[in-house]
Picture 1 (cartoon, rainbow, N blue to C red):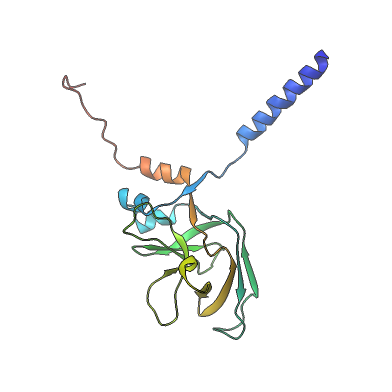
Picture 2: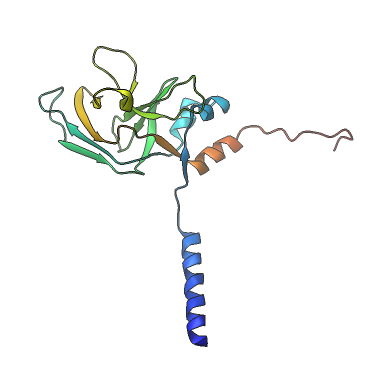
Length: 180
């Protein structure tokens, strides 16, 4: 009986040690307010690690757009990506080395808005939230894709990267009446 308790205790400690030492990607939502409040520059955006919030599956639309493309592209939930371009209310994130990336757009007038999976629309300028369109059609590099799953995906950010960036800003400690 005593031996079982010791084995059980050692097993529990081992699980806790392994769990504590394992590398975790701590993810958080990335809001417009982060970018505005902390004046995050385009260069600083490129230094943050982003992730896709859910599985995304797209199919090439037959007979539309550019040349040969993969018939099905899958971005599993949590796929890491980096910012390769940005504008006042959008980010282009590449999820593969050398990839052109896909757009994410936010409403800059809503500070708590997230960056949503977005697309260009034929004959219009700007980027549009895919989940708000009547047909979830992605236009990328002149090629049209049908978004089968994940049109409502958003960007997550590595919270530790974002916290490190925020800590790099000047923090005033304040002062007391007696100068301490």
